[in-house]
Length: 482
Image (tube, rainbow, N blue to C red; front, side, top):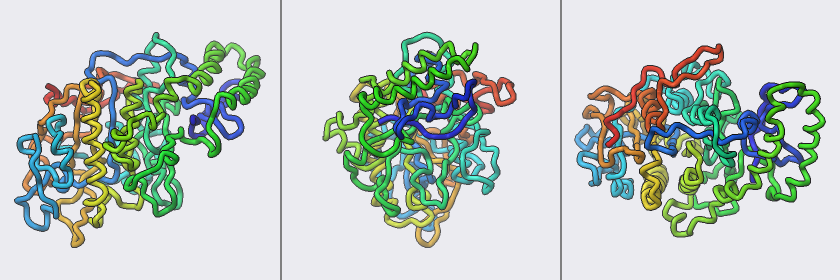
């Protein structure tokens, strides 16, 4: 099932709107990509200098505690060290939580950066910073939603660069996708949030991710923590109206919309849009009718045992879908582990959720992904990044909750030449500050671009038409690579 987010953009000559629902009829869309991308009508190859052909970014929104995951301090005072114990792993010196046993068993496949740090101690701004490599220009507390002035995400830059390259055959999948929902979609607020960081920002909606949508049963449901049925795990493209599936017959019946477009052709004049117009129509139909698209989104094609291995919960099945998408050719896939009840990884109150739900689902899915990629020969060409936007305060409250602490937090990187079984950076005795130079979001972005073979100093034109580097003041962490 394919469709796209609504959202107005500019109007093309002749009154044709370049919004993402431009091909929409009877409540069901005809394509899963934006108009500018479709008008390009060509699959654009990314640079080939890097080891990574693709990236899977597991984003643990809310901020997992470093002291309950990958930087445990059992010798710290009782008020700091936390309620969990460290266990042995395959990485010398790694103190990993007892509730991450499967991950500990595959630690020889990943590196832990222990010294991530930034000064934007807020969820929305932190999410923007981590996913773009640029500090959000909105002050803490002054906003929560994405804006058109935001910096483009790393995934959007990958999409943009792909669109700028020439040659290749027609694409049937985008370069950038987000699963299972846009960040904020399932959070309980008076108005729906669209957290910043994952969008095209001032590069334009044409490089926004293609985003799927998975609903929850009711306001109290947390699909990240329970087994989901195949009827729930539809991975529809965001914006598709409910109802029967989008079939080829329905597409043929809806061609009248495309015929209506033809009536506007004479009004387009000599616009550059006209030159690509026929390709636009054909691409719209090719996308949703292609076997490649249908196959990539068919999660039920996976063996039941493998699906069980990832976990039948929303995070596990979304992570498995990410593997399917990169295997099909998508370059950058973000999987959000979002907040549902207002806390989740944002564990101000350290209830049983961390022990019984959050850590076990992460443990199951991350370990399964690394093993699955390796089994398929994909780990050498897929960069896996797993992290939150911040850490938690070293000193806990009386309920073992911890507050926001962006000063220090970990990131897990694997694949694409990353040295497995390694640690990067040292922290103090309380997991409060970096002892070695801290690692910034700019450094992380530069490292991801480097792995993809993209020069972090590559320049794009900002809204004023000035060429600006995609990363400023960041350096690739070359020591991470073997």
